Each structure stands twice: as structure tokens, then as C-alpha cells.
Image (spheres, rainbow, N blue to C red):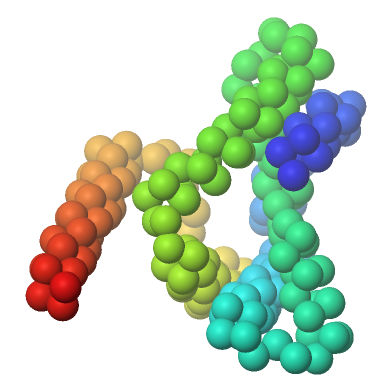
Amino acid sequence: MAGISALFIGLMEPIAIEQSKSQIAMWLNNPSLMLDTSVILTIEVAIQISFCMLTTENMMGEIHKKTTRYLYYILWYFPSVLFFAVLFSLLVAVIFQFPGVEFSVLAWTLAGGVFILLPLGVWGVKKVLPEDSIRLEMLFLTNALLAILGIVATVNGRTAVEGFSEVNYPALIGIIGLVVIGLVLGIWFRKIYYKKYINHHF
């Protein structure tokens, strides 16, 4: 998947350089296009939640029909509906961020970065959350949150909240810090609980 993603970024460079900020702003202000995007997001959430449910059934040994098992295998290797759209938007953002640099160099450098960082990210998530059930639960909760955001993001084809171009970096860093602290504390308390449980029963 990392190789396919890197190849996609490198080959999409001729299309990415044809995009403009004004055109992208026009797309974002197009209500019908935003509604179409919300429909695609809903399909994406449905697919990911279906994968979570089928994976749970497979872990419990409750998948007996061949068609259900084939569907499970398809969803297992299916990356995402919006995955390549995100990669394309990332490529366009990088091209806008570094004007004057040769486009092909930027595209293939980003492709190399994705090729390296994607497996490292997977390894890091498995290192932080070694249990398959916890990773599956986090995927389910994340998609449930996306489903809620997809519902409230558009009202009659128009965004419910006015967008803004400036990022409040202190607030963003504060939120990330709180998430990291909560994650570390959760892992620490979980290890203490397991030690007490093991000592109590064995």
C-alpha cells in the first residue's frame, strides 16, 4: 500500500500542477460539490464500520458464509474511498507551499516520504496499541465521529460554520498535548491494572 501510494503521488504530479488556489476555493464554496463530498464521506464511513463489524465477527469465529468471508477479505485490502483524494490534496498543498522548486522533485520527494512514513505510522500505532481489539475499537469510534461530523457539516448545501484561514497554533498544540498526556496516562494505568490483575490471580 505504501508503494501504491508513493507511485500515485508521483504520477499525479502533471494533474496537481494544473490546480490553482482560486479554483480550489471555488470548489470549496460550491454547495452541490460539498453535498456530493458528504455523500462520499458517508459511503466511506459505512465501509469502514462494516469492516469493523466483520472483523469483530471474524475474531469471534462467527463468519460461516463464504460470501461474508469474501466480503471481509475485500474490505481488509480495500484502503479507503477518500485515501487517494487525501494524498492528491496533500500533493497540491506541498506544491503551493514550495514555489520555485521543480514540481517533479517535490512530487517524488513527497512520494518517498509517504513510502517511508506510512509503514512507520502503522508500526507506531501497533506499538502504542498492541491489542487488535483496541485498534479496531479506535477505528470504529473515529468513523462514528466522522459520521456525526458529516451530518452536521452541511446544512442545505451550505457549511454550518464559517471557515477561517488562520490556525490558532497555541490552542492546537494544547489539544495535541492533552491527547498525548491522556494517552500516556491511559497506557500507564492499564499496565498497572494488568500487573495487579496478574499478581492477584496468579
